[in-house]
Image (cartoon, rainbow over all chains, first blue to last red; front, side, top):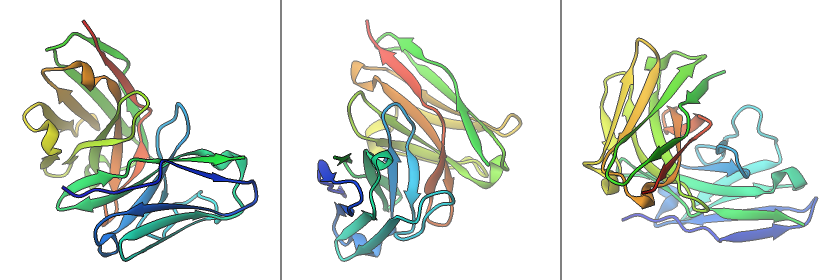
Length: 106
Length: 119
């Protein structure tokens, strides 16, 4: 079965750039999207179709997807960006989530 | 702006069934699909399946085939998820979400429903 692999944790200093990766076989041939989830809250879509930001998502969030890796990049990371991030892709009509990455801003 | 409001907390015994509802507002219900995602305590997101509101077609995660049923009532703009033969490892927060766009991202989410399975 298809799998998406994310690092369990990423740390970044305020104002710096955070990159969260998501790896899967030929992931670049699929569309990836990303969700942010803060404690006690529902997930929030922050990126779709690899590079598109939903309305209301700050411009500091950007995405890319090529080869076997999709990446969510947060430029000028703020304390409010501290959360769990999940990548997602469809494979043969089955939706797959990555295991999630805890982003710590310290 | 779309909104999804889910039913409240449930406590069930092993072997029982649970039905969670998800009422949509603020958009045309029949133009989008509804998906269900669950999250066990301290764990990641697990996709359960989705239903096309337009034609009722469903697609369930293989792991839950035979135990889950997703339905909709277009007259009330409400989606339902029923899970049968509950086990302790079904304890989780269950979310509904709207399936949007040509690439089927989940753009609006319900607030979640905690289902606890315990004897």
